[in-house]
Length: 450
View (tube, helix red, strand yellow):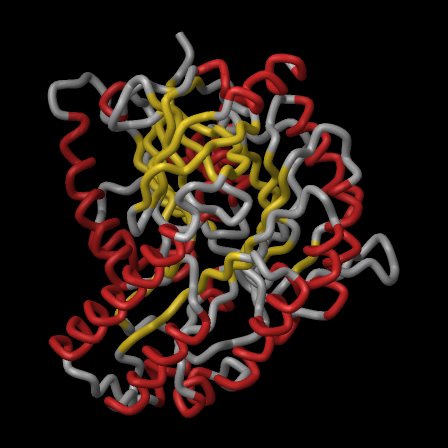
């Protein structure tokens, strides 16, 4: 009988995609997916260490996984991969001695080999060495999404923002050849995916190692020409690399979504300097204005940290005012948490009390919720094209999808619409999603296309 595996993923879109790669590698090695971790011979926990809470969740989950072998003849092997594995290495076994394998971010391709060694020797196996595994064999990825495909274009970061652990866990930036990227996009489209999500820690810093002069805007143009691609998204760019060529590509390329996720992290120029973000409040707002001048309907979303060391009430007020001025379509917001091996943990005092961080986060999220509701209410009565990507979790008769601006839309529909773009007239709006009905003309076009 085939051995079975289960993968649990914590963290960002890149971690989700890494898990898809790990699944493919394990299946190449003869494993098959288990319906439940309790049935698995191998349980892989793919970790995130960007926030302290993600680490806490990991160790809590590892405690639960200890009991998986109770009542079984053999206990499953537990493997930890990803950023916490890279960060902690052998120290992870002190808190979780039942873990059999620790695989760093740049040793992912060795997972099956390390599991075999751990099981044959009876000793834990650890590899956090800096192998360069950014290029994976074509066809290895086992994609979990039927409509959207993530494609890594670069990995690692060399910017060293003072709060960020990524340069230590992912290593310095490495660029993937454009030919490999285009081959993977073509393969994903051939497998039925309609939307491509290009991934990198600073995605718009991309420079193709195999095509001199090919930057990120040029790569977007190449992906735009791949037959069958319906939509192109990317995450996450840096404000200082939003060039005029990128703005023009977003405006002119038919398949590039009119959505820009542009992390700012703070509205205070003083705090931005302490974060080493390399842009000011005014420069960030100028970028947003420049993008909107070319693309008036563009949706701009962001990331924000509150309670960074030294943040005063005035600094936080600047964050609130920037949030209103930018009119973000959505926001990921967090309380600052100390991360190992960062400049901030070594040289900056975490001096904002926890209750102040919590109150500032609540106030920021309340302001952002109001902005989103206003933006969504403006769409009521309009018809918007929606790429249907899932069935609704609340109503079995509904389907769900996203606008080009990345807003979730729910509507009565049919499972056969998955992967299709349907025109939906918006009838109701909430702060997090829209609800509407598909227009008959849009359905007629879909039937003709099918």
